[in-house]
Image (tube, rainbow, N blue to C red; front, side):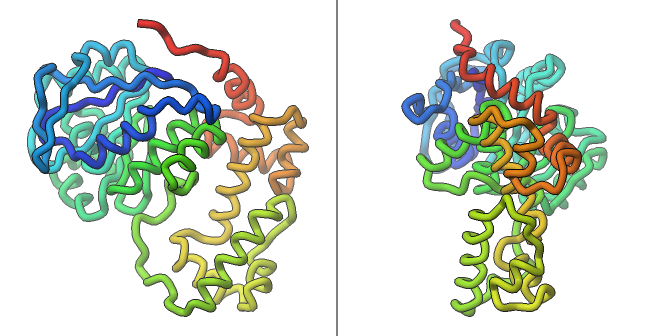
Length: 325
C-alpha cells in the first residue's frame, strides 16, 4: 500500500483532505515509515473549489486509480450533493480489482451512491446515519463504531475517527510501528479500535480524583499486559468495586476494560511479531493471552491474518520499494 489515491471533487471537506495528506503525504523514512506516493485524482485536472475559499490542484486523472494500492474518499461538505458518474465508475472499478477503498465520514454516501455498500455494513457520523439509511435502505448502517470494514470497503465516523481509520490502514499494511510513528508526529493517539464508541452517553466523570485514578490504572496496566489482569485486579488498583470501576471506565474511555485490554494486547503482539523472532506461543504469553489458541483467534479476527502470516507480511513489507511510474 505504497501508492495512495485520494479522490477529489468540488465541495470535499478540507479537514478530510488534510488528514489524508498528513498521514500519507510527508516523507517519514527517518522514522522507519515507508515512503508513500499520494496523488490527488479527479475527473478534471483543473482547479477544484473547496469550502472555505480554498482551491486544490489535482495532479492525476481518475485513471491513476488503476495504479493505486489504496483509494481514499473524502466526504462532501454537503452529503446530499451528487457525485459525477465518472468518479462513481472509477470507485466501482477499483473495488472490483480488489483495491481497498476507504471513505471518511460522509464519504460513505459516495460509496453508497456508487452501489458499493448495498448489503454491506457501513458507518458515518452518528448524526448522518439516519439520512444514510433513508437514502440507501440496502446499506446496513451502523451509528456506533468509529470505523468498520466489509469486503474491502472501509467507512468511518466523523472528524477524528477519520484519523483513526487512516492510521489503522497504515497499521494493517505496514505494521504497528509505522502507524505509531505517524501518530507521534501528528501528536495523536496511535490506536483506537473500530468498535470504540463514537460518543459517550454519560459525561466523563468531573471528579479529578476519579479521573486520575483511572488514568493511573491504565498506565499501570500498560506496563503489565503480560500479567493475567482482570477487572477485579484493576478495580482494586483504583480503590473501587469491580462494578463501579467498569462503569467509570466506560464513561471515561467509551469502551469496556476487557475490550481496552484486548486492543492493547493485540497492539503489543503486533510489535513483538514485527520486532522479534519469538515463537508465536511466546508472543502470546508476553502479550498477556492465556493460550496460543486464544491469541490466534483474537488476532486473526482483528487483523485478518494469522500471527505467522502477519509476521511474514511484516518482514516482507520494508523490503518492497514503491512501484516506479
